Length: 208
Image (cartoon, rainbow, N blue to C red; front, side):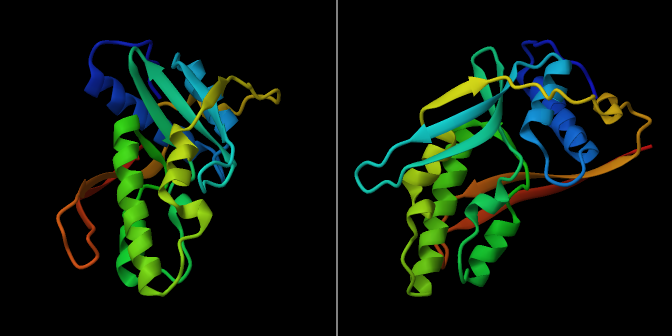
């Protein structure tokens, strides 16, 4: 892992952030703890925190709440969701939707605008899939509800873990690990399902 204290090179900062998040995730067994991830990132001098969104019922929108991680660098806010793909699972999905779902990253790392685009496309695809099965879109899969998860009113909080730090929080280049990174690009070109996924790149990283 590489310590980063900021910088004006946006792409370079992002690349290092992605590598550090993936390395941290691979070092944490099972479900990635948001609090432990924040602890690791803050040790690397990132302005990282847990974001807690919460919204009430209004205009047909079901009340809800959600948690994810964000990293702020200047005027750029990166959202990190360690269980991203699961948020878009639906009942009796069509083959097309299943393929689209599989193209999503397990862990999302990106800007607010990138997330907005991804949520919009996935919600449109979910609606098409559910309509094909003569099913209604459940309240927790509607576009506004899904957007509120990451883009609704939120508060940032830092809640360090009190237990002993894991030695894996200080991985170096000699540590053996393998991570599959997915960068998702979407194209809104009309196809049979009105959704098309393009520019999907799977990158395997192996060190050691």
